Structures are given as C-alpha cells and as structure tokens.
Amino acid sequence: MDQPVPVPPKDNSSLLIIIAVVVVVFGATSGYFLAKKTPAKSNDKQATAEDMVKSANVVGSNDTKTFSDVATGKLEKGGIKGEGTHHLTRPGGISQTVYLVSSIVDLDQFDGKQVEINGQTLKGRYSGWLMDVGRVKLLE
Image (cartoon, rainbow, N blue to C red):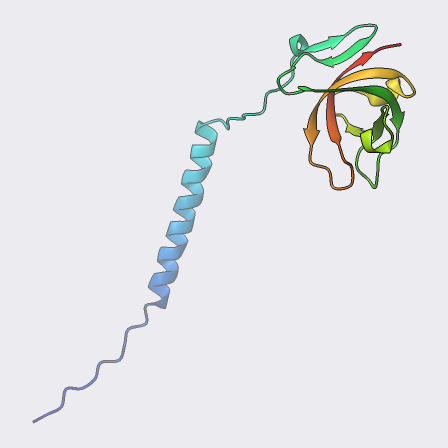
C-alpha cells in the first residue's frame, strides 16, 4: 500500500494580519462616530452664578449639601507637610486645627480674620482634619 503524501501546512499569517487590520479599523471608525453622536455626560455639578454668593462678609457657594461641614476660628496661611494652603486655628490647641484648601474661594483675602467656614471634609494624610472650603463668612 502506498502511504499518503503529507501536505505541508498552509501559511495563514497573512490572512490573520488582514483580519486584525480590518477589526482595528472598524473598531476605531465606529468608536469615532459613536463618540461624536452622543455627548459625554458629566455627573459633576457646575457652579452657576445663582449658586454663588458674594457680599461684604460672605463669599462662596450656597450649596450646603456639598459643603455641609462647618468650623469656626482664625484663618491663617500655611498647611502641614503639603496638605492645605491655609489652616483654621480653633480653641483647644493644635489637635483642633482644620487644614484648608479651596476650589471656590480665595482664602488669602481672609488671612488673620475670624471666620466661619462651610466645606467638605477630605481625607488627609498628615492633617487631622482637611477641608475643601466652599463658603467663608467673616465674623469680625
């Protein structure tokens, strides 16, 4: 009996490369058109003029849900180990100090003043209490 002659395997690498290129081009094209068709949605609430207040002794946001934490004391420049741009000195010693940053209010204008702040507590690495200030009320 004669043995069948083995057939050498076909080289499919060029076919696989063509398929891969077609898949990549199709994916990029459909992604481009889908991105243009549907605008990105954002859950971040943008502050509007109605949300802000600026008077002789109050500056910042009216959003008391976001900025629900309240503290009172003397606002001074300086943070702790890179956390905060300012701090709020309160009765009870250094353990009661609130370190502050603000995405809305220019805290420099209240340096050395007695204030009440509304903010949102953030996780601090070095500070006992780190707050993003949304509203400042001048008490002096």
